[in-house]
Length: 396
Ligand code: PHB
Image (cartoon, rainbow, N blue to C red; front, side, top):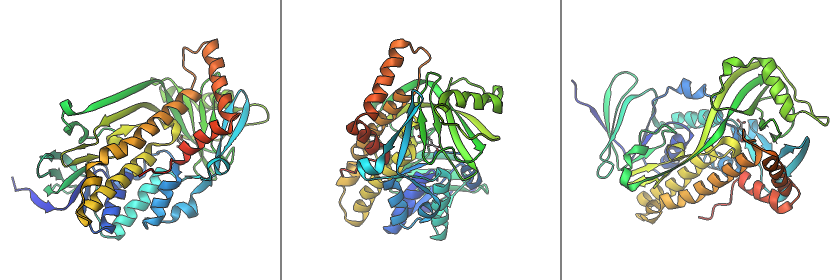
């Protein structure tokens, strides 16, 4: 067997999703070298339907760091959302409450922008690799992989970053005795569809009903994204268009509001849970994004949290290399986890606020309406939601 070809770099990054690519991009701007490897192909990643809401901080980073201003040209700014319950809609006006907005701009587009920017800047990003393994993270890290043409490589780097998603191969490298894994399972999942239909509303509708939760989101003028709460074992094969639309109608229509329907072009069940792996650093290995934590999609926090981890890690690496100051890198895990737990709380709260458990009784249902009412009838209640949804100011 031919010897592995040695590649040397400063930071080896596993995963070319938004987190891995954004980190590589920021490092390149600061004169720090990186190599990104990714097991999926570019085409695979670009074809995966993911969530769509960006906090203002995420948008600013994309624009200010020179990734692209396509988000401003083609994304939609949303200044609020609607909470719908008991047959009525209540607008939460982000701009008025906290002076901020979010952007509807699908994660796939964030990936395409970042991948194009890295390619244009000559970044070393290798898609479709196999047989990856990470070694010696407590000393001089090495990453082994086979590229898409069958060539075998060893990357030697100062640091390894696991940006390899919720099935991370880096996460288990933090030894069991030194890590804590926090889990919370929810007794439901989301049934997600893409439908060819016009927009039903200018803003996203988060609907609570006795029949369960539904979310009316958007993609383009002619394609819409929607979800309804379902059993985690639900099989999409049992759901034709008529049955799906009847389910949505029972959860959101009423009092003059009617969902615009059309042919359903994609359907999937998305199970979810809350998960955190701490610490987010072991030796010279750092975890970012879904590799370290997952949140239920109700708060639209997953991608935004990953980008925040990357910002915090970038500050640490930049000051390590360019200012010979190690404090920010050493405190990465604690600084990132601060926001991770705020996002866990917010995502959990939004989920329990809006979903109807299968064992709901008269008391739990009435209590939930009381909670929803206490949010929308109070400027303070709505401001809590608005500040969290649009993204907390960064304390660091
Ligand atoms: C989406 O558009 O896919 C989306 C929007 C908001 C969420 C989750 C998903 O909270």
